[in-house]
Structure formats: structure tokens, C-alpha cells
Image (tube, rainbow, N blue to C red; front, top):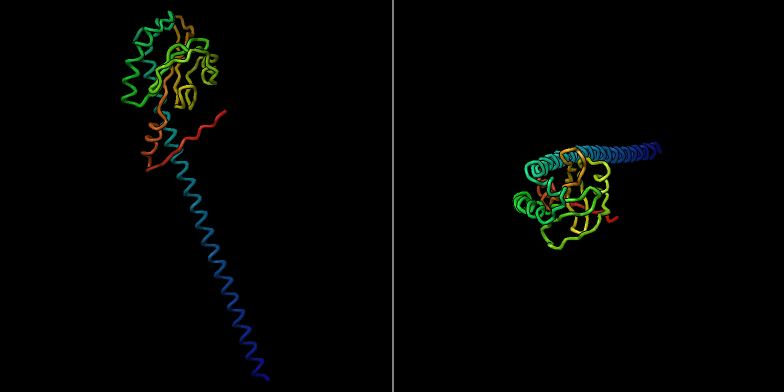
Length: 208
């Protein structure tokens, strides 16, 4: 009788030990898995912040560069005179040379000049020769026509979607007379961003 009780007790103890070891194993596996997940999340967050910072620096470089480009064209040519006189033919001839050089070297795919009220004046686009003469209803053009300050960002119009840098133009008396816009190819920007640790990017445009 005692031998049966001892044997039963031994089996119970072994069972309890097995269950305890199983529970400890499950807890250990869960703990390791949880820690690995936490580490992965931290690494992803760190990488995301690094990419965001790099993209921010690249876009700042683009904005600074094309602010200088547009400012140089405006200041060192008769751009202001042509815009004030609304000499469309001469303006188109002037910026065509600049557009060709920037398109080949920097992947600029759009160059536009706007009047003070936001009305389209001259457009050069890599894929279209036909111009669309009408007042734009784009938010960026409304913004610069109202606030007269440099503006940049992704924008879309009849000529497609690109990253725009739009510079306000003032005459010698400081009066706002229009805006000079440059559009950058999205593929060019993504390619530049892709040089960061083989980062692969996509641009999603919301149709509003």
C-alpha cells in the first residue's frame, strides 16, 4: 500500500515538474520573442527617424539650390522687365535656354511664370508644347499670390505631379509682380533618396 502511494506521489511530482518546466519554457520563449519584437521595433523606429532626417536634408538641399537658381535667373537677366511688360514671347525665349540646361542636368521637368494675380503667363514642360492659358486654382499659387513668400512642396496641375519650388518676384520698387516656378521630376527625387542605404521609396498622390 505504501509502495503504491509512494509511486503515485513520485508520478505526481514528475508530472508537476514537467508542467512547471513546460510553463517556464513557454514563458522563456514568450519573453525572448517579446524582447526581440521590442528590439526590432526600436530598430525600425531608429531607421525611420534616420531616413526621415536624410529625406529632410535632401529636400532642404533641393529647396536651397533651386531658390538660388531661380533668384539668379531673375536678378541677372531682364526677367523682371519682361514680366512687367508682359512680353510673353521674349520671356519664353529667355527661360527656354535655362529650362533646357536644367532639364538635362538636374531633371527639371517644368518651368512656369505666373502673373501677380495667379494667372498663368508662360509654361515650359518636358512632355507638352501646348500651353493652358487660364487662372490657376492651385493652392500653392493662391498662397504665393496672397503671401508673396517662397513656397515649395509636391503639387499637381495639368502638367502632372512634381516637386515645386515657387519664388515670388518683385520689381525695383518692391512691388509683387508675379512668381517663378520650377518643377522637379519625382523619379529624380526618389533616385536621390534611394542613395540613402538603398532606401526604396514610393510617392502616393492624393487626388483632392
